[in-house]
Image 1 (cartoon, rainbow, N blue to C red):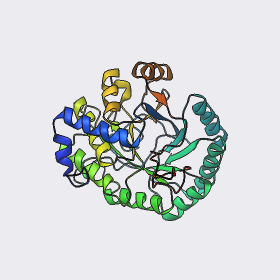
Image 2: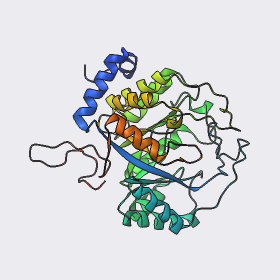
Image 3: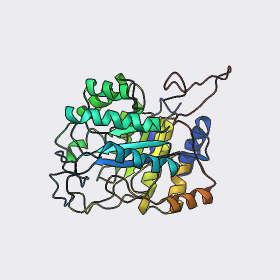
Image 4: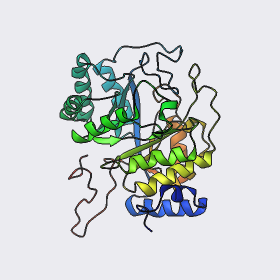
Length: 334
């Protein structure tokens, strides 16, 4: 039985050593096991979001003391992008706490994309829901990736968010795909979901018309003032199992070890990399949460013998004639 036909639950629940061996074997067939793609994330508009995501400190409904900010000026975004590139990032991710962008914000967003592209960085944005017209405009400005996580399973989703539906999430991913933008979509672990929910989330992603090119796996970082502020910590082995299953189900996707790394030991991060994680965020902050600093990441890379990627985030396989066979973009400029 191939990974594509076996039930995902069978993959996830197999003995851990067998799961890790299979995931590492799949990973080596598509990627250099000692290279990690590095991105940097900046919040271009923080707080005041009208959504009620139970995990989020940026929600205006959650009683958080985080104050709302205006959209960051374009030149400030570009200054941060220059710092990201100097720190070794190859992709620059820009996040705004919105339900969806307004028309008045689109020209500035387009200018940010063009400016970051001019620096030689890949561009990614996460702005909430998008219409087809908005996705087309972002692609026209040169956007490479759009992040829109499905967060959890369709079954468990209403327990976490009520202001937009699971289908709304899928509709935005469809609009992004149709516009020719690469999809970045994953989820959050530790929300109170079951193992079956984690498996169902991965099945949803793997069975999209095209699996996401990038799959962030986040560990909940409980934020004061949110409904999940006292959520119990997830068993780290469940994180490793989720990453390994994601690698097997989506062999050509980058799997990003995302939020929550600041609370992980080096040993746990090493297990996640062995399980198939090959992308991280660098820098000391994510949107509103801490992230390991540059010195910490550099030391970990040395300990594990890892190197940072310097090119586009695509898994490269060569065909007999030496051409790119990623199937992601028709070339090597995703």
